[in-house]
Length: 464
Ligand SMILES: Cc1cc2nc3c(=O)[nH]c(=O)nc-3n(C[C@H](O)[C@H](O)[C@H](O)COP(=O)(O)OP(=O)(O)OC[C@H]3O[C@@H](n4cnc5c(N)ncnc54)[C@H](O)[C@@H]3O)c2cc1C
Image (cartoon, rainbow, N blue to C red; front, side):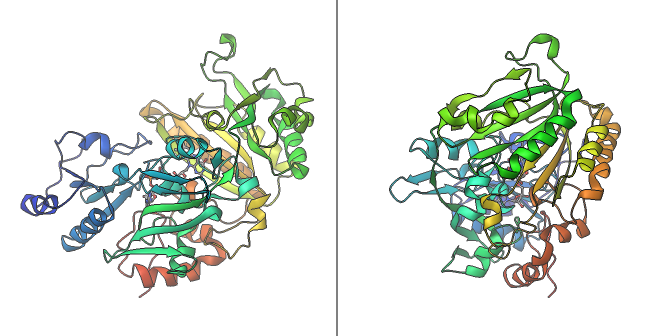
């Protein structure tokens, strides 16, 4: 149990005056809920938690932290496994109240508060049959996910989330509130699209929307684990020529204890192909014939609302568990890499851990590498090793297992990885993950945050 942090209470009282949102101190109702995040390993106690109700509140909180020399953390949905959303002893700016979403169905655009969650954005946009590439679990925050580029089932069709970002309202380290788009502060707009939380606090995201569904063809196909190599190889070959309408992934996981899974299978290692097909729903089975022909033991694919596809992996991704992640991006997925992956994952240490192999390409590859700050657009495959378990006493062995899987695929991985899955990799890995854009991003950091006020993130260090 950590010590309750101390803070100048009179100064906090002063901040609270004129603050439209909420100010929480240790012991206040809501303090513990606000400081808890998805990864149960993180147990930190901010001295103060500010929950702004608008951009002016965010600006006041930023200025307060600067004045009192407090380390600031920014919480969107609290999903980053790194725990960067929670500062120990400093000021946490929790954007939970900034979750308003406005959709303009005619213009096909949406404006969403910086603390909104993907489930909320999907619900609001799908009410008009519209969508933007969003996170694969509804409780993920749009803030962290978008600023790290934003990968989702729709990316092969629509590009990353940032490829559909039209603008943002941002509170800078100075406390100034600015707007960034192609025509205003365009350098900042470029940096926001893949730069993590390095340049400021986004209070509003503006997205371009696309006609999707509302009914699409989706679900899961399940195979026994001993067929992992064969299924991943077939999936890879299929995705080489699959239409952009075909999104999804292949995962190595254990059958969840869900009603729809026959009881004898609960906890058994399986291979699951997740399907999100956004062509005509009735064309779904024909579109994935090569995978169906493999003969899954369970076929749960069918026409379903897109919002349900967005919940397909929600049950296996609940808050409150220990988390340890690794991720790699691969230019190609040769047979040798698949063999290494299936061998390393053959004996899972946790029935909650999943290793997901994601096809990139399509619209993601059609955007030029320099269009946004996101590094490494050319990768064809992403592999996310999502270590999850309940008992903290197992931390060491579970972490070792995830690291061993990562080590096994290293020979085929490129230098940097996908920003949103970074955890504890350190400075060098962060630099590598921004790739060739790092220098330009450093210059932007010098311009917009020369004192490194925003540093609880995959940090770009200013050089001024
Ligand atoms: C169950 C689960 C599923 C996931 N699925 C996907 C997926 O499908 N695709 C994908 O790309 N990633 C996915 N991720 C990773 C996820 O995108 C990152 O963890 C991301 O950081 C989460 O955003 P958040 O706002 O919830 O996180 P938080 O932990 O709240 O924030 C992480 C960091 O982002 C910054 N930040 C957040 N909001 C703002 C803001 N409004 N302004 C400025 N900075 C901000 C801050 O630096 C903060 O420290 C998933 C994670 C989990 C746990």
